[in-house]
Image (cartoon, rainbow, N blue to C red; front, side, top):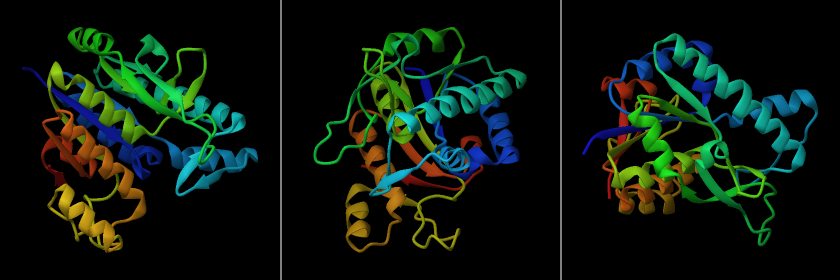
Length: 257
């Protein structure tokens, strides 16, 4: 079974041109089938502020009204996605930028309005495995942004971590899938203010214990939940760490069952 690397890039790396280009150079140099998933939430918040679009968060999750959906679509599927694809092409990496609507790659349903109405936010249903497999076999690296669709013409804002985990799990019947979450930190930290306080390995029992004690940053909780879900659904291994870990030289936290 061929190895497939699914890499999600997010956090401050997306906003830092130098850091992003450095990461893309490493990604382009990776051999074998690979998929890149990118976020962009921080840049979306900054752009919303510039344009006078109100951003509402509930428990750290963005409420996506029609105005915010328009902004996110322009940024995620437009500026960010196509900039990344153009840079990868310049680096010799044949790639194709995708929203979930492209090739019907990622289908979702609008999240129910109760108990909380998050607006145009999608909960994932299915991944078009044959489409991804076709691209990968042709030597094309899909570059997925954080947008899905409902099959009825509606785009939906969808968590990029969840997209990465779901795509990775869905393709685990076809490949030996390795899932890497890259961001500006060195891994899951015991102390957010100390970049060297890396937790080398973390299983679900450890996670629940640290969560109960309030020792994990709230922004890390949904990411870790996605990690454990991916492992349960057949992903070979999952790591969270700095972008250099894709070259095996960076630091990371190994997530285990």
